[in-house]
Image (spheres, rainbow, N blue to C red):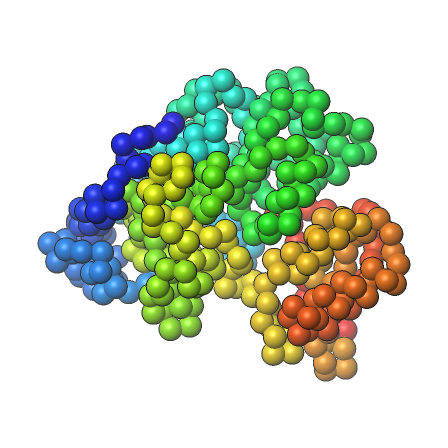
Length: 421
Ligand code: ZN
């Protein structure tokens, strides 16, 4: 729901509330977990008097959380927690976030705000396609939906034919999913002669993956919907850290629950608004795993701290450009997969399935870009190669494939592969 008073607080009041809650968070860490308190330099809550004091705290990294699997940094005993969610990381030890009853409540509140920001209310029908399980997505949407009392279709991932059937049968008005899932829906809908415009669907809320503006326009056009970009991760307490509103001029972060900073990924120096860097999150209301200056690895920037046309005053971030760990470096050129996606999605003949393959041939780095397209002609191939060269200064070898030739994944899309010949 729209929490008018909290979402439209003047900046001075937001910051006052943030300092007060930061003190409480530090006090909780001190009381509940001496090891964690020592790790952050044993600060006394009364020493925190402004947001500027945050700069004195060390960063917390994903590695720190992994090394403390499962409850090393948790603030509370297991009997105080009601369950956990876990990061979907593909390598190494997972990251676990234990939830107290208040954490579940907090999550529901921020998710309800996100749904309201996307224009949903009790008359809506929300089809939830992320999984209900260790991954936080399904439950997050579910709690938010319960708070705004809309009708939930708790289908979870996959079963795309059934998804389309339910869209019609249950009069779904909004769909939530990871950002590559609508591509699968669109593909199957085309095969089945299913027309989204004959349904009640009007809103899509997508996240958990980096998706370009061009991809977004493709999804909106094909599905006849307005889309919203939602952010959040297991570490911060799940999906719902922020979302863009109907004005679509940046992602509002719920600042009464989180403090965000943008830092230089190399030096850790805090960057001024407008400059691109790594997103660092401090939680203000989480109990089970409060975070102080957590380095998310997401690359973005602060767009504005002014009041938005929607009335909300909570600051706005740019859409996530990439993750520090998916930055690719080939022949001395650094780039993100999203930059390649932006180029190829401009061509109407190109289908939204692609893979970037990085490998070595006779000791030299080569980049192959495999794209599905309606037609496979030399002219299209050369135009894409030239455009990428002029954007990045990098020569890529484009291969155009027929529809369906790139394997699909049920979970997050696999966009980059390494292959040494
Ligand atoms: Zn807004």
